[in-house]
Image 1 (tube, one colour):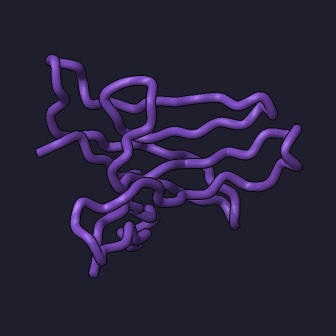
Image 2 (cartoon, helix red, strand yellow; image 1 turned 180 degrees about the horizontal axis):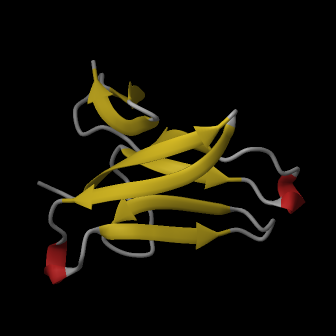
Length: 109
């Protein structure tokens, strides 16, 4: 299995209070499948599970935290990347388990 990720979040009202990424799978060249983060010139960030500092091209979950230079806003979970099979789309999924909301992305027809 390639490096995949999901996230668990708890909220206070509409604001994210705590996020935990759960990364699993294998990476080429013995790299570790773990949480990666990149920053933009607006002070924002993107977090995902991956094998290195570049976001994967395949369907994956990203926590986008807009920076003040881009107008700010609340952090949100989005799906990015493409699916390996033609006709599929990378779809955002979520479910509530107790006080946590779990997020992930998967390829669907």
